[in-house]
Amino acid sequence: MITLKNDTQLAKMRSAGHLLYDVLCAAREFIAPGITTMDINNFVDEKIRKGRGIPTELGYCGYPASICASIDDEVVHGIPSKHVRVEEGSIISIDVTLALDGWQADSCFTAPVGEISEDKKQLIRVTEECFWKGARMAVDGNRIGDVSAAVQQHAEAHGYGVVRDLTGHGIGKEMHEDPSVPNFGTPGRGVRIRRGMTFCVEPMIAMGHWKVHQLADGWTIVTNDHKPAAHYEHTLAITNGLPELLTYPGFSWDRLPKGENNI
Image (cartoon, rainbow, N blue to C red; front, side, top):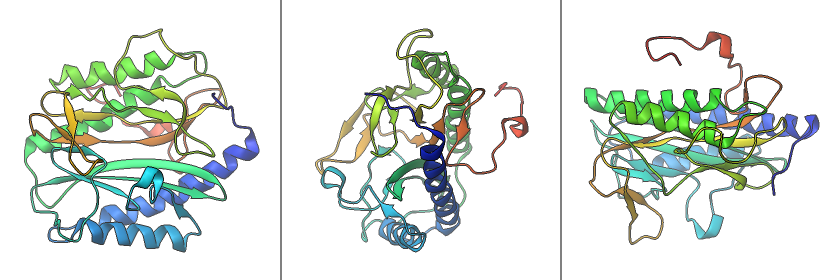
């Protein structure tokens, strides 16, 4: 069931999103060659709790950590470990969900670890562009397929694979609510988008083929061809115009650069 949020509920989600934005900005600065993924987990967990939030990934369906930390060919759900160090030249996706006063926010970024190759830089850039392409379509009256198709078309135009086994999702009091928001689809199909909906658009884009599999730990999803993948996500609120990014305070669509990719 899809729930439409009122102004009071959106204000609470906005507060949660602002806390998550601050946490992830700090996490991005914290990442450096040689630290462990558990170091990042502990850093983020402390920041969330200092902000009076709750790291809602911890314990979710038995998940054992406060963040997902996915390196190179790990698409999502990489489990932090004190035995895994991030190495120069790698890319790492940090995916975090938190709750504040009972309302959830979810966001993810993929970052370079030190100096990375040009092809990895392009993968990160295009994945973020896929988000902006999709998010622009998240307007009252459109359909989820319009969002999905925009993501898919931009990724595939660059020769990348669009992961199909995982999707974006509604969010509110719960981490995962309706509707599902795939990163591939057909324009004009799917659930109609309405003002007051809140959901996450989160492209998961692979440098090679889109097929993936789960590791024996029961969580980590990796690309079948072991080529790198990137992930970018924000929590959106549908308004009378272009969506509000609840996890990106101060963002204005008017200030989004418009270059050759017409984002």
